[in-house]
View 1: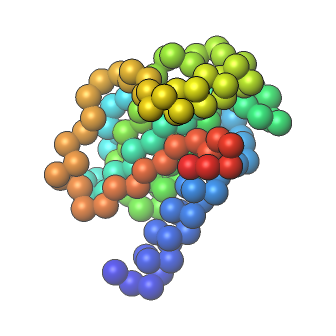
View 2: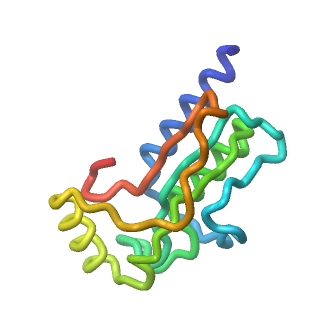
Length: 137
């Protein structure tokens, strides 16, 4: 792996962890399916959960911040994508949502999600991303 590839991968990972800005973009057409990149790179995958809707300080957004960063990582690295979809929080305002999420985290509860997880044995690199709530990942 060249120095440029290592830097690009580290930069993409840093963006994934530090993502807190927002932009609205269109929703993914086929949620919760493995979306193969145009580069046909079957050795990398981005697995992520992203919250759209009512978000802190930015209002209502169509696409969550983590989805935006996942798209950047896939574009840069040629990675496939798998979005973890749960409808438990759909339509919830920000404050009730974070209160519920914090309560679930304290109890060790995980919300149900759609579909089955991908077979990771075919991938050499797995990027994992999720929302940053309460200043934690």
